[in-house]
Length: 120
Image (cartoon, rainbow, N blue to C red; front, top):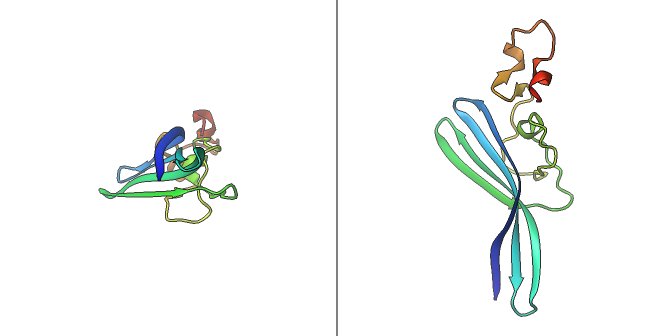
C-alpha cells in the first residue's frame, strides 16, 4: 500500500484586495511512503483558499519543477519563493493593489510610490 502524510508548510501568503475578495496561497509538501519498497518521496503542492463575495472555494494541485505561474497578490507582498502552477483556476490578484489595503489608482499621493514605503 501507499501511505500519505503532510510534510511541511513551506510558504503562505494572505491577500485581502477588498472586503469581499480574500485569498490565501500555500506551498506545502506531501510525503508518500511506498510500503513495498520503503521509499519515502516528497512532492511540493500549491493550494488556495478563497472567499469572493461570501462564497468560499478551494484549489489544490501538485507542482512540477517547471511550474512558474504568476500571482500579483503574492508578488505585491514580496513572496517570490511561493510557487504557483503554470495553469489552473487560482486567483492571481490585481497589479495595482498593495498590502495593506492600498489601491495605487485611488491613492492621493503626488506621484510618489507610497507602496514602496510600506514594503510592497
